[in-house]
Amino acid sequence: QVQLVESGGGLVQAGGSLRLSCAASGSRFSINAMGWYRQVPGKQRELVAAFTSVGRINYSDSVKGRFTISRDNARNTVYLQMNSLKPEDTAVYYCNAEITIARVELDYWGQGTQVTVSS
Image (cartoon, rainbow, N blue to C red):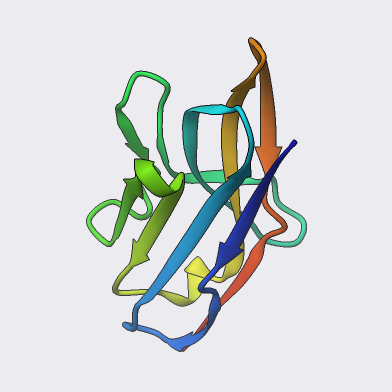
C-alpha cells in the first residue's frame, strides 16, 4: 500500500504565496507520474500541474507563470510553489500519483489540503 500525505495549505491574502508538499510512502513501489489537482464545490476536479510518465510537466493555463511544480525523487515528494495567488485559486488541492506496485499500475489520491485566498 502507498499513502500520499499532503501539507502546506492555508489562508493567504491575494498576491501572497504558499508551498504545498506531497510525500508518497510505502514499500516496493515506483512512481510513474505525480502532480496536483484542485476542486471547488460544484465543479469537477481539474489539473493544476503534474509531471507526466515521460518526464514532461503540464500546467493549467490558469496557473502558468505563477505556480511551479518540482520534485525530490529521493524523498518521493512533489512540491507546488504557488505565487501571486488569486481568490480564484481557492480550492481543495489534491495530490495524485500513478504508481506501479508488483507490475500493477494504480492511481492514488491524497486527502486534500485547503487553500483559501482572500481578496
